[in-house]
Amino acid sequence: MKVLIFSFLLLSLISFIVLYYQRKVRMLHFQLAQKNEMLILKSKQAVMGEMISMIAHQWRQPLSMVTLQISNLEFDKMFGRVMDEDKVWNTFRQVSDTMVYLSETVDDFQTYFLTDKETQKIEVHELLGKVLKLVSPRAKVKQINFEIHKEKDIYLQTYRNELMQVLLNIVNNGIDAFEGLQREEKHIFLHVKEHENMIEIFIEDNGCGILEENLHKLFSPNFSTKGKNGTGLGLYMSQQIMQNHLHGKINIQSSPKGSSVIVSVGNL
Ligand SMILES: Nc1ncnc2c1ncn2[C@@H]1O[C@H](COP(=O)(O)OP(=O)(O)O)[C@@H](O)[C@H]1O
Ligand SMILES: [Mg+2]
Image (cartoon, rainbow, N blue to C red; front, side, top):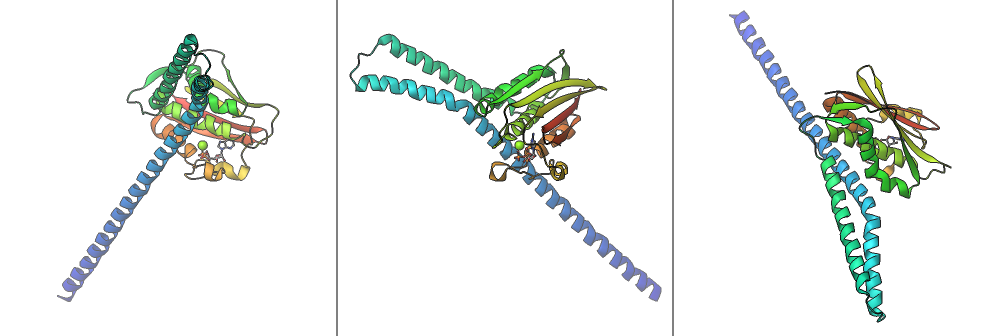
């Protein structure tokens, strides 16, 4: 009888412990999922932030052109100058062209920041050219030269927009690497190689470089050396996209002469 009671108590105790830990594990799972969701949300916000900043750069010059042209007409009227009909029409036409350009810029960015449902066959240098077109206003202000070195066409079957987002993050980091830096010539050099069924995209800059002690932290969420100008989510998110969606990875090397980012990606 005693043995029976003892076994019953022991069994109850074990069931209680198992139930207790099951609950605890479920709770931890839930907390982890919540944390992950927060991180994804923050990454999305960071991407939006970078996109808005790129659009702002792209818009600044055309917008001031429009303002200037309209003020020219206003001045003419204010000082009682004769309104030349050709001049007025010319201004209208130029303003209208600029508006089309502004609207196209938004369309461009909107397309690239949507995620693809299907893979596409792309020529890699062509994609790099599109990335550079998006960041070129930012680079021009900072007097940074881009160069794509091409030997031959290299094709890749992949999710084009995702790869584009990753490359945009990396090139934007390259541009940031010249912040407050005195260099006679600032350049970002891009080239592509085929290596054992993989395609390697090299993005090299002669910017500030990365401290050895920081190299292993680059892909951690929130790691940034840019203070309030950085989110530290760009590389984290890019590595996630590469590993989880694009069958690839990012490697980063650095020296005092600058940094070299290698994006390895396979066909999907
Ligand atoms: N090309 C580069 N040159 C120098 N530092 C870089 C480069 N790319 C990345 N880094 C470093 O990696 C950090 C993390 O980059 P990222 O995740 O994009 O965040 P953020 O750009 O918001 O700081 C940067 O703050 C910077 O210190
Ligand atoms: Mg960044």
